[in-house]
Length: 122
Image (cartoon, rainbow, N blue to C red; front, side, top):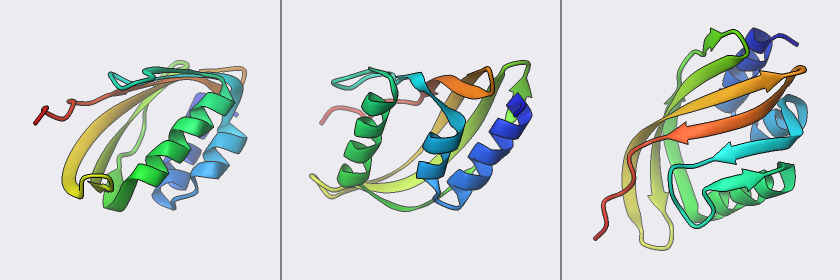
């Protein structure tokens, strides 16, 4: 698969809520995932990435959002995610946008990094 193919599939499957298909078909087992903050800002390998995704699904209720078309440059692509969520532990509902940048090697996503404004501290 080309980087464009991977980007198109990721966008299509995220729009359909098929996140497991993305992880199973598009990601390298050795993927690195980077967040701007949090307790574990770097996840190394698919088991840690899946653990992070599981934590997110348990803690956030997703009300809706949008996934942009991808922008591809060589072996990189970026996607904007707009989300309306509620953080279950506090009941706080927020709308946010984030940019996700992906690196592709040998037909698989080997790195993802997310950029967004952190929530202000109360």
